[in-house]
Length: 120
Image (tube, rainbow, N blue to C red; front, top):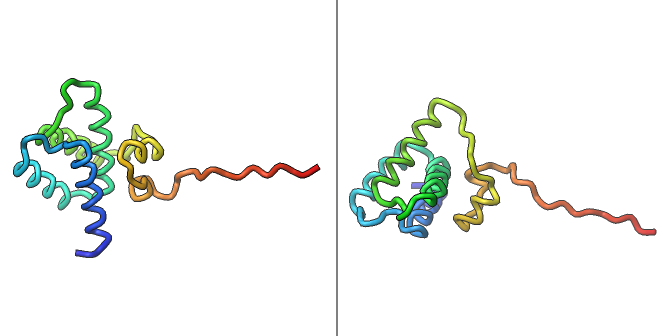
């Protein structure tokens, strides 16, 4: 496995661990997550996890375990048939995950520009 592939997988696992998304379904969750990692690119999975996480914040208690991955998988399947239209900005992705959003969103992230004030 290439270094970048391992880093990509670690990013997905970091999101899962940060929000304890595996719940009590440790082994089943890990197998399902591995299946998703074989079928989809890690940046797509990262985005799906975060989108479902945001959606699940409206429900108490927080959805976790295999059910969480099933919802993420449904979103990934939807994206196979239509363009991915994230409901989250790169900035919010960074705030929620603590991760650099560039692998997920590309280099479209606006950098703060320096305003030059002309001297008088």
